Length: 233
Image 1 (cartoon, rainbow, N blue to C red):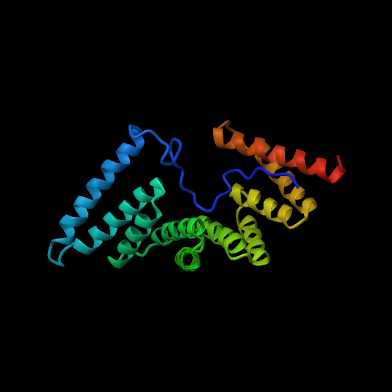
Image 2: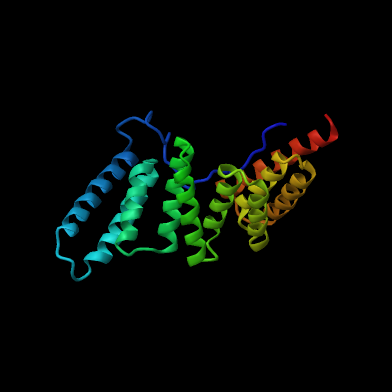
């Protein structure tokens, strides 16, 4: 089989600027800016940690560690991101967003290190995020990807992605993912149906944003590839 385009089909949703790895020049202004922000947040955390447990200390530390976790997440520093989000929750910030980004951090680290415990922790935090906010589609999506790929439960993962698509026809990456799931399971006809439906929806959208243009192009390419395979050419 060929390779279908997936339109940002990744477990994490972090958008890294530049090359996004250690090959980036040290003078990268965005990386430097994040480093400055991390240093500032670590300093603020130390200041609040040294204060007596009174007033807004706990709430402030919860927010500071959340902000710190987000900076580490942007850098792909999964160890520090995990530690920061866990500290945020220790200080009482247990929102759906904190659980979601903790899950993203655990999932990425677990995938890179092939660490099953991290995958279990990622699943736990994804489920906590969806329990707190049942409409948090990013969390439902991340969980479906985790179940399908990292846990290897393709049937359950596919069902979860189908439910996301049924809930929101404008959550386009779920449709890309669902089509890919069908394709990988040897069901090209169903994959084609998903992409044809998605293409029809994308053509109705007004505007010419870069992301919308990319979605249209990748969807059209998937349709061309599938039709070619199904015709035997």
